[in-house]
Every structure is written in structure tokens, then in C-alpha cells.
Length: 366
Image 1: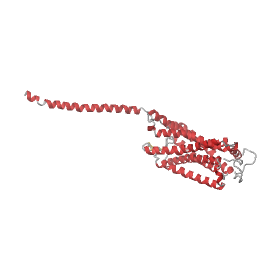
Image 2: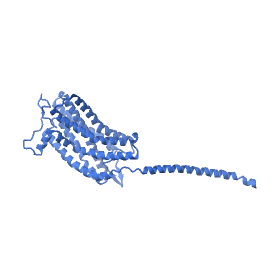
Image 3: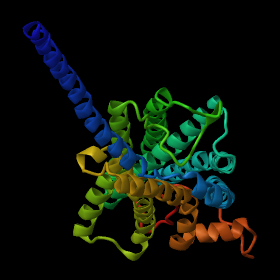
Image 4: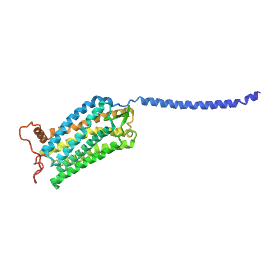
């Protein structure tokens, strides 16, 4: 009986060993789960940047003021260019289109102010229209800044003397139309990949967030960010540096000749200084994994920088008319006559200089 009782003891020991092995595995798995839970808790402690508070406090008042001032300034530029300057000179055609680009950009500001005060509540079709106007105005302004810079470069080196005045005006009209078509075409990807955000069963249309950066599509996020940086910042920067360095080496600029050059290049410098920081912050945010900026603090600072830089850059659309007033005497004179502040007779629309007279001897126009 003792031997028979000793026989079932090994199965009990094997069973206990099996139970021991069975219970040891969950303990190890449980240890792993504890570590995961700890890491998740650490990640949850990272508070993301919330742009709604700053938008609700600053954007409605600032954008309303920028819209009012910019609308008045750019409409005055359009009227003065059409009434006094005329459209028989290349730079006037580009200045006119530049003012129209600013007006396209300005038309979106009241709606962005409204969405900031109402936490982004706006219907999807209207939000897409705002995104389109915003992008078209921004890209077209970059293109017309490039055209103005190239036009001053050609004038500086007398490259335009090979063509007649009619051909130059026709060419400027063609390049202006091409700039608008290009701005519309490069805006299509923003509209194609724009996805309205749903919060509380309502469409959310936020201006502070990049509209063309869907978080779940990394390739298109990178592609559209590069497009924004190349066409909206690097392209104007390249033409500005190239033309300015070539012109500075020759040192041909006289007192009269420098008036319009200073105006054109100051407009370009202001555009680059105001949109450059936003493009850099946007680039670092989109490619944060390549720069080791995907941490909690880095993401927080980048998102805050994008919002602040974008708010600052948006105010550029009302600065160009102020540059005309401060840097161009002819524009100040025309503005004075337009506002009936001068007693002498108003100037007539600018005409083409007679054949054989130099542009420096003729009355420069903006």
C-alpha cells in the first residue's frame, strides 16, 4: 500500500511544476505590463499645446484691425496705380497685381477672426474656399515679388532696351496671368488633401493649425510642407539674393535710380522676414523625427512657435502700402492729390517716356 501510494506522487509533483511554470509566465507578463503602463503614464503627463486660448484672445481683434487697415491701404494702391500711374509700365502692372494678391489674402481674415471667437465652427465648403483664397493670395504675392525683383534686375542691367515698350507691357501681362494660374494650380493639393476636423459633431475650421498637414498621411505632409517652403520662401529668397548680389557688385545706382530699387527690395525683405520664421518652424515640425524634435517639450515649443509666427506673418498684407508711402516720393505725391490735400493740379496718368530718353531722366513710377 505504501508503494501504491507513492506511485501517484510524481504526477502531483509534475502538476505542481506545471502550475509553477504556468503561474511564473503571467508574473513575467505582468511585469512587462507594469512597465508599459508606466511609460503610458509618462506620455500622458505630456500636455499638448492648445492654440485655442491664444486664438480666442488675440486673433479676433488683431485680424479685424489688420483687415480694416489693409483693405483701405490696398484699395488706395489700386486706385492710385490705375488713376495716376497707368498700366503702360511693367512695374505698375506688377504693383497692381501685388495689391490684388494682398486683397485676396485679406478677404479671409474676418472669417478666421470669426472661427477663432467661435472655436472653429464653420461649414466645410466655406472653409475650403477660405483655405483656397489664403493660399492663392500667399503664393501669388511670392510670385509677384519675384517678378518685381527680376524686373528691377533687368532694368538695372539695361536688358529691357532690346524690346519695345508694347512688347514689355504685353510680356508683363502674360507673366502676371501665368503667376495667377500657377498660384491656383499649386493650391489644388491643399484642397485635395484638406480634411475638416469633427468635434462635438461639428466641423472645425482652425486658422492656427496648418490646413494641409493631415497627421495620418506622412508622405503628403512632407510633400506639401516642402512645396510651401520652396515656392513660398526659398524661391523668393533665391531670386532676391542672386539679383541683389549681382547689382551690389556693379554699384551703378544713382540717387533717382535707387528710389524704385529700394522700394522693390524692401518689399521683398519684409516678405521674407515675416514669412521666413513660420516656414522654418513648419519645416521643423513636419520633419521633427529627423531632427530629434519629437519629444514633449520640443513638440510643445514648435506648435506654439507655428501659431505665433503665423499670426505675425499674416499682418504683412497691410505693410506694403506703408512702404510705398515712406519710400517713394511719387506715390506720396499722388496720394496727396488723391486725398485733396494739395492745392496744385493733380498729376496726369503716367505715360511712356519718349524714345531716346533714359528711364532715370523720366519720372519713375510705382
